[in-house]
Amino acid sequence: MDADELARIEATLLAAIAEARVVVTRLGVGAQFREIARHLREMHALFVEAMIANERLQTEYLCGWRVAVENSIDHLEALATMPDGKMQ
Image (tube, rainbow, N blue to C red; front, side, top):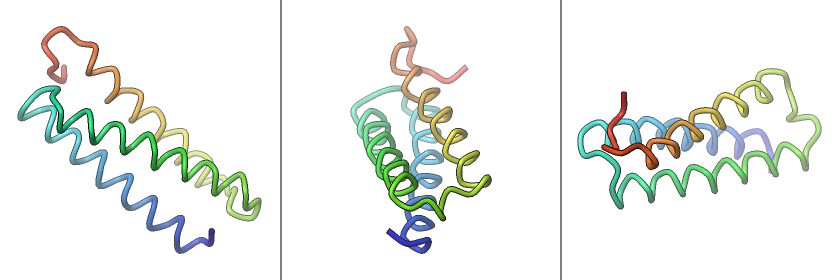
């Protein structure tokens, strides 16, 4: 995987995180939100695999970004366990 493909994954992840936040704010946790969260986790795994496979892509920025995205995904997944399913 090259830097351009990694950039496309990055853009897709950012868009999906934004979409998940809108969905959970408007509709709460439901099937649509859970599907977005599942897709986010899968895309993040692809991103991490690509970074592991290509050492030159392991820049400080991308490593930090990877952690930030993982934290966002963890937060979104945690929403599914909240009693009312609404963002605080």
